[in-house]
Image 1 (cartoon, rainbow, N blue to C red):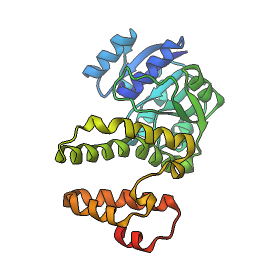
Image 2: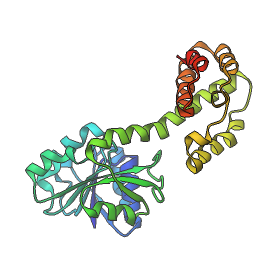
Image 3: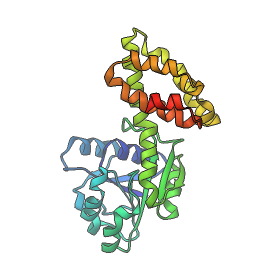
Image 4: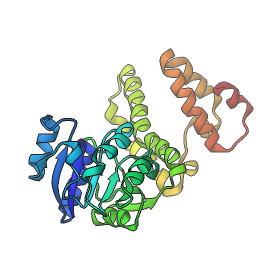
Length: 266
């Protein structure tokens, strides 16, 4: 397949690179402006043409829209007239489904539309997607492309996309934010942040092996109110809301009705 990449950021470039590794070819790259550095770098990487957005679809059987979520509809409208008949237009958003393409489908009923969201952090354009799961929507070709690059596709309906994406954000961004709190408290106690790595990895692995409820340990799991109170007394004021919120989530996971602990965490 000849591919047009619209939005040559980290996610778009990573997915395009995986497709190239699977035997496809990037022919057009379009960014905010033709002379933007990210556009030129991506075009050079793929030995592709730099194209204005309104002409990006020419000659491409697959168009990857990898723009910010709120720009997908406008971008699809901008490239509509340049699309080849029966081309597949694919966005990489986690929170949006096929509804993002309703205006495009009305304007160009002769094209196909789909969504493919790699359930993976992509901190660099070279981040691998092989082995990741991917939320897909659209024709069977979308799932086929995901499998071709080594991903495991699963379908997510439009009315579940926001819930799915919230889970994805919690699983990645919120975990990282929580580790930021670990780093701050560890520094305050003169303990190396790296000392927590084996325990954290073990907790995550156990959660996926036996389920979060069975993997839960610690003072909330034991109903140890005095220890929780000691923690709240020891940590800085601005760290307490996050601690309480996560301790309350751990309490919910226990399934118990412990009045004393519930009052402490309220």
